[in-house]
Length: 243
Length: 243
Image (cartoon, rainbow over all chains, first blue to last red):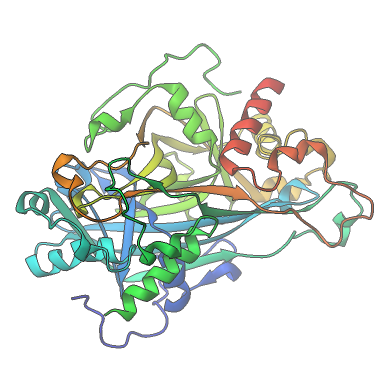
């Protein structure tokens, strides 16, 4: 079970580690904002250190309360070094737009990002691990886990689940137009925002799918043309509602 | 000038630091593949260490030869600690699809990612810095820098450019269908790939844009509905061709 089922404080604590120093007006520390940005993505980047060397490992995450989870093969270098519990920083970022100004200095991007700080640990408890191996499916694809071939003991053994309680977090958001002022408006150059979004394409069924086996309605949230952001937020809400 | 104008070896060296250990069959070390993945994105994540604490900072990058650049305010914590030159790992990742299998273990994602290792340093040389402040515009928006209000001395001073020679790099790619075998094909559950891509939306002109100032043709590469991936690769090619 996640360790934060008691009602958490609405804001993450602000410390020298997570305080947003550059453009502090973009810093946000409330759980609702932080969680919304985490839940809108499945790709995260984990910074960790081995013998003084930083590594930035991309992986896929999910969240239960104030705990982030990700997983990987027991063979991976990161996981071996994590066995004792390792300080980590997990970042999730969304690029929302390119901002073209009338001077170089005001060029920018619209984005939402979260940095989470904590100690990553291997999930050893068999019950927590079993729950996580279900969650990694059902959190993204509602009620799917029960429809799959059951995990074998060998598969469970070969999968390492990492958990990290979010001790501190900060979100940083830019969501506005061009930052030019009157002193730039006279410059005869086009300025504006080029929005970007990550969208879902047409589903590609496995050629070995049994005939007459349609895509289940539970995957409608991933309909072609929708944004991944919306699908991931919706499936997280469904997962939380299912308890 | 980038320090790699002599013809580089086609492959990055493979060391214990950058060798892909988990799913090694997905590891690629040739410059062409590595650079294509770097150039297809503008969002990177930088892992760095301060007093033993890892940080994973999202930022925007560009590339000249074997050098990655990114920039930020002189006030930022990361940049202060980088002044002496700091080991860093810069990762660029693209999520290309969600892979739904017939068992939990074979669920996966299609992706392209690159991890780059090197020592980040502040670009102090005025010529290299001036070149970088032009590149950060023109690399993304062909020939735009010359159309902008010139940078002021104060703006140049307030902008710190970071450069990192890529000493080692590895790419990791998954680009295929469901990994199930005959032992899973009998499971009566839909399996397949949900592709995702990052696309460009309708341009939003700044409301203060002078009347009758059209979007320049040089921005056509960012036309609505195109992928950001293709636009960024195209603009990198144009930037390299312009010398």
